View 1 (spheres, rainbow, N blue to C red):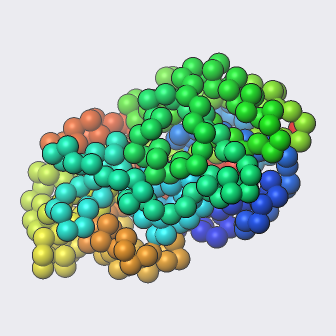
View 2 (view 1 turned 180 degrees about the vertical axis):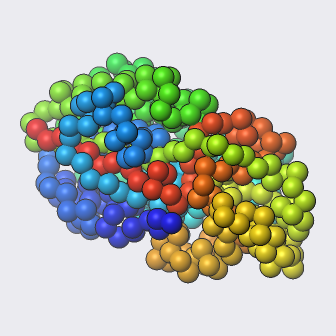
View 3 (view 1 turned 120 degrees about the vertical axis):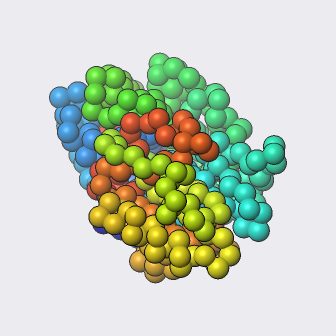
Amino acid sequence: MLVPVYGGGSLADLPGSMLAALGLREPNALNLEQADRVCLFLVDGLGAELLSAHPETAPFLAGLQNRTLTAGFPATTVTSLCSLGTGLTPGEHGMVGLMLAVPGTGMLFNCLRWTLPDHLVMDPDEWQPAETVYQRAARAGIESVYVGPAEFEGTGLTRAVYRGVRYVAADSVDDRVARVHEAMRERPAHVTVYYGDLDATGHMVGWGGEEWLSQLAIVDDMAQRLAEGLPPGSVLYVTADHGMVNATEKIDAESVPELTEGVALLGGEARARHVYARPGAAKQVLEAWRETLRGKAWVVSRQEAVESGWFGPRVRDVWLERIGDVVAVPHTDLAITAPTKHPIEALFTGYHGSLTTAEQHVPLLEVRT
């Protein structure tokens, strides 16, 4: 089990360190060197172990100065994006999983697609009220720019984690590279650019295969082009939100009686399940899940997960009920699926979320001009 290294070795430490490198009074937990312009290239799903397994496909990235960070728990996009957007641990910002119970409602909220049942709406400012690093940068007179797909502009997740940025919509690689180079002409510059197709490919066909390697080559070329267009006094950081494993075994949590008895809601995702028990059934659910998944998953109570520091040194009281009564985290290549309620996820090959090194370790690569 790799508990994230919060406070000096996690994604949550990166945004404040980047602002500190630009001269702001922020904690520089990663000891980043000063620069006039900072760009973060965020590659969805580019785990450190995945990258190191294929240096021949990504020669530019493989040749960069490299250190390793831990993603945070769970190792999933919504949690990591919020950590990068706020500089807070999951226990502080409250985005502690993909699908979370909305306390007092009996409903699950999908934090990625920003959807609730029955067309209900969740206010991003209420679900994630913490100030973002981009708002802090704006107070210091630095405009933050985010370059990403047009489809994500104005979504609930974007509004929750990127408040304060100037969103620049760009869909193609060429467009994103060009928009980054334009934004980096400013001094100071604080720019983030996102690429998500590597992760999407890994989910559908698994990481390491021909289609995934083709995407890795695109990422490598994009990173090189971003670096080659940087003005003097710039730094480019390349990182990811999580790694990935290919599932060799799946268990349908909807069809195993031991995994359904006493369960009110099944949240989280296949590698980091939040299991919400019916009133009075938490102990029974914990025991049943532990026995059923023995040797395949770490299964703990909410209290054990919090006290073990999975979500950070502290979890705010207001967020505690978002965490499952039971948290089930596979350590083999197991995916805990729910095909009826989440049919697309059940078809995946690649998954992430757990506390294994393959999912937790993300690279932090650096180019300076």
